[in-house]
Length: 351
Ligand code: ADP
Ligand code: MG
Figure 1: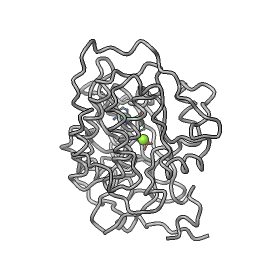
Figure 2 (figure 1 turned 180 degrees about the vertical axis):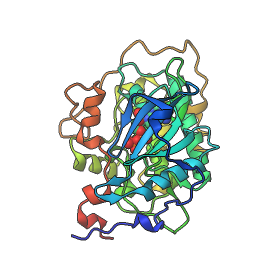
Figure 3 (figure 1 turned 90 degrees about the vertical axis):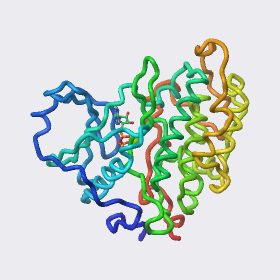
Figure 4 (figure 1 turned 60 degrees about the horizontal axis):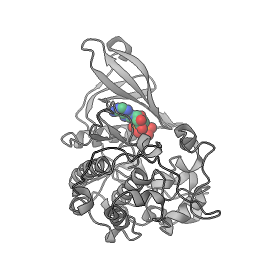
């Protein structure tokens, strides 16, 4: 069955084709010690890597050149080009160098030693509100600069926002520009991408993608940092999509009673179905929640997080066997990244 899909090889789908960074052919293991896995996705594995000459630590992202039997060099070059474009953005991970092996193109990235902010969403101990607002401010700064350069990330989620250090809690670094697109080069961008739980309604409806699409994701991230719950996760993908398209969000969660009312106001303003109704990243930066003076000791509330109420058959996902188990959570079907050709019923794509 024919499935309509933008041809990314044409460069007409907001993909960038020119890079300045040389692609080096030197054998990687002659220059670096690879010391362990930091993370992995469908087509990439990220390893901690130490430069032998200097002892400097990097994160090496190994990107497969062939995926599903197709040459994907164009997509890899695009990811490099976006990182180059964001070189002056202090909230985006820095690209150090690029190597090519038989099967992979390897991006040597600035190492973000503090892990994913996902770990703070999945943890029983919520971050203090003052830290949540600091991380959201930094995320918005990064997103604002990306949008100023005409780039939308389209895969913002707690797994793609890293921290420079864990103790003390460092600054954020945005990673994973595989789905990022340049706006405004070829008119409207309508492409289905993202991860079900984090995807904005306009993507499900095959409506134009704009910078507002990223702001939806910022709302989801803020919700998750505050509550420890994913606002739209359903029992299966279809339920998740339904929750997203109906903007079925629960603000009665107990976690909200432990943060200021302004937090709910901030999230409500972002999780709006109509993209034009969402504030821009710059507008968000002026929201009073983000600039609130927090008095008292900057400590984690003594009560550990309790899961939100889940009504049976309602919007909340049945918790995985162990709700605090990140592996388990990540393995659940609704956290898998989906692409148009895989998951969207054909009828929805034939526009
Ligand atoms: P994918 O496209 O497969 O999702 P990512 O670029 O998101 O690849 O990397 C996968 C995971 O690897 C991230 O979620 C993170 O845990 C880890 N990671 C990626 N880049 C870095 C980095 N620069 N420093 C530390 N860890 C990283
Ligand atoms: Mg990722």
